[in-house]
Amino acid sequence: MTFSRITRIAGSVFAAGIAASAVFAGIKINPGNMSPYSKTHVSINLYTKPDLYAPGGIKGVIAGNPSEVLGVVCMPQKFPNVSVLNDIEGGNAAKNARNINKNMTNQVYLADLGADNAFSFNGLPPGKYDLLVLCENCFYEGLLLSRDEHTLSESDVKSIKAKLLESNPFFNVKNQHRIEGQTGTFGKARVLEQEVRTLPVTLQSAEVLKHIQIRSIKLCLMESVGTAKLGTHWEMKKTREITRQEVGPPDTKGALPGYFCKALQGIRVSSSVKNAGTITLTVDPAPNTTPPPTPTNP
Image (spheres, rainbow, N blue to C red):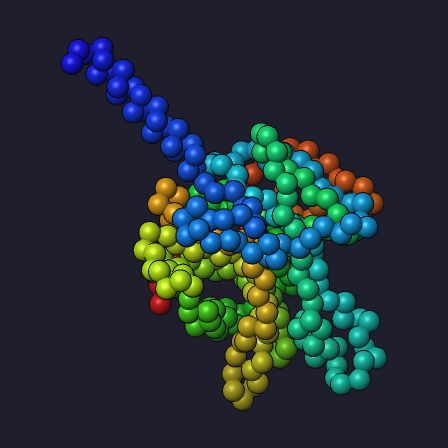
């Protein structure tokens, strides 16, 4: 075989490798489609359907992403209005706030992705929205976790992490990216949590897959139920999954690094589509938190 033919073959193999890498650079968030790895369908009910009667929306372009953008989601800045509950029979304002938290729906909307990292949301009710951008090897978020002053103590944070660690044993790797809230009786906290199952996954057909991982990014709503006598004790009252991925052989494995980006927070939507322009992903100081810990393996 001549040197030129070897060169052509090597070049073809290299090009094929590049093409394969491009194909498997990351699986876009597309609920309802079949997973290429387990051949199962991702639920379409994870994301909130656009409101057909709401003319609001957000559009823009993501820039500065270190890897392929797999999805953009938004959540309304939704917190209970305690002041309107003062006359409700059954307790004081703090206790009523606890009760309303149980029934609060946290919407998560999924954007349509276009060329060159363009994104658009439609059918959004009026309000302020925070975005999360999932890339192939990391994510950026601007979630407002608390409107009130952050007063959690080290004891509170320790108790919250312990409760998260023992919850949902399906995931064996857990990482708390940010925790914010208020201490005291009926104290409330929100946690941006990332969970990964790196162990074998058993399908409904009883087939065991060892080559995939399951990754979930979720919002956890915690409540303090401790007393002065019993000490600090937190319980998980509700979770809201934001993204869920099935990670295959060519994808980035394990827990992804997450970064707070101020530009993704507080985009106001009224009665029209808000043009957010170009949003450049940056790593900004996260409010009321220390650098995220390394993933914990129970």
